[in-house]
Length: 91
Image 1 (cartoon, rainbow, N blue to C red):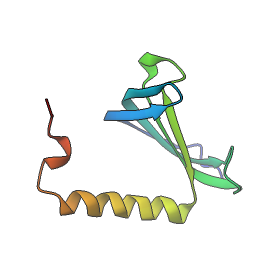
Image 2: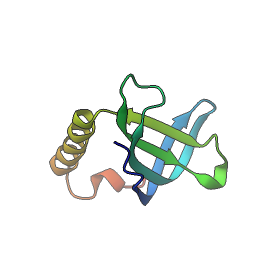
Image 3: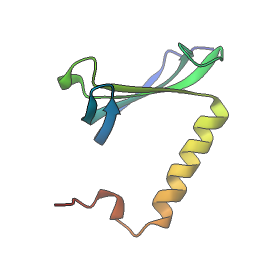
């Protein structure tokens, strides 16, 4: 069932779209009807940079199980790295 509730957060990262890499500034997470995935409803995540226009978007549609597994994998990967390693600026 669609919740129509959207979790919005500011992020700092990069995404790759049809024209190459671009900076990401926002993410939205919500449960809704799938557009492409072969499921009635999915957990949808949109990574965007609104200042760069509508093409600056990377979207994913995941099953509930896949979304939970992804969240656990992200947490495990960060926990296994030295503190601050994932955000170190490189020259």
